[in-house]
Length: 97
Image (tube, rainbow, N blue to C red; front, side, top):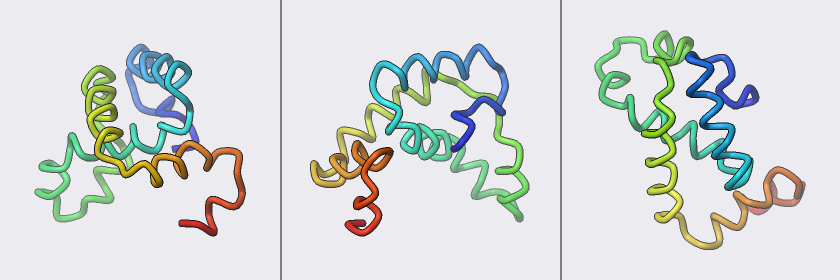
């Protein structure tokens, strides 16, 4: 999460995600990570040790991740989305969650 997917190849895909995050808001980084995990959920569920797979994520597919992120945003309750938007700069969000 802290690297904004910079450690997950290919770099060109990471740059597409950065463009999305800079345009829509850096607060969506966590939703992008959740979307990426959602997209690989079947493979994760088949693993006897899913943590091994999560140490090295599969290659990024920016368009799929962005599409899934936008879909997930629409499902969030307004109050939760507000907390998500404020969490990068508002220290009181942690207490509210």
